[in-house]
Image (cartoon, rainbow, N blue to C red; front, side):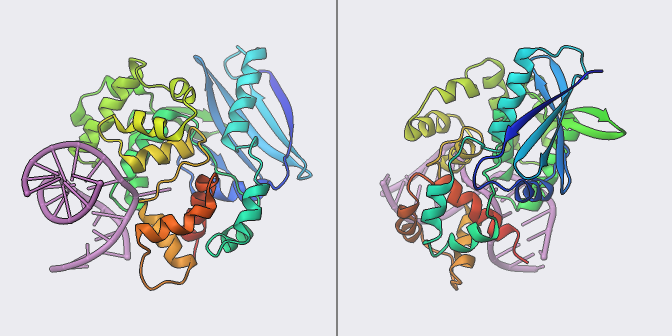
Length: 302
DNA sequence: GGCCAGGTGGCCA
DNA sequence: TGGCCACATGGC
């Protein structure tokens, strides 16, 4: 089996360690993260490649690709590098965000504590949508339980050096199920319907990442998504922020965000929507990053 | 045991 | 538009 290496220069204001810490904290079986590296299987068309990423001297990211299916070509390499760049948001220039955040009463601490963190993506649209829907209106811990069940019941597992790696279930697989099979995981009937319906839309290609990426205007993208049953403003903004890289996507009704602002501001009560709108006006253009940092800050508190 | 949880859709005025 | 309310179950 052939092994290929590719080296990326680490951009400014990027800490691989801080990003690995985040990945370790949110491990879900799809990848494995350690304090020095992260590995996962990445699917390119019909083939799977085992990819490991580590850093060299904090100046370079080394991407190691194992050609587990003997199908490696120039396009494979291009796609895998694009995947990694997207996953870690390497194209993002965070310096203007940091400049703004250091003067912001809520963001000052988060950006200091997690300096170098990027909005780690959920590159797969179906995964991002399912994860958002699972997380609606239930506590985060149970949402992780449901996601685990979802992956282990319907996903594909791959072995590497004795370790199991999961691939997120495809929309095609979910669309071929009976809704009751989703219900049995412990989610509500309504959520089962939402997820099943979205799986159908994606299988029939009415909904795809490529189509959404052709939309550059946030409001239009939100409208497009919220026209789908089960996707409200929160879910649309969550997915646009985590998967499609809309910098101004802002899940403003998010309860963790509210708690994070309450925590960061040492308030006795959660802020009102109008207060958040007012304070967040200075985050314009960086709402997604502000939200991501506040989540990280709040969820990692002692 | 009661309240809250990374909301949404549907109904009503 | 804006205000309820059902959904439904786990975590604390």
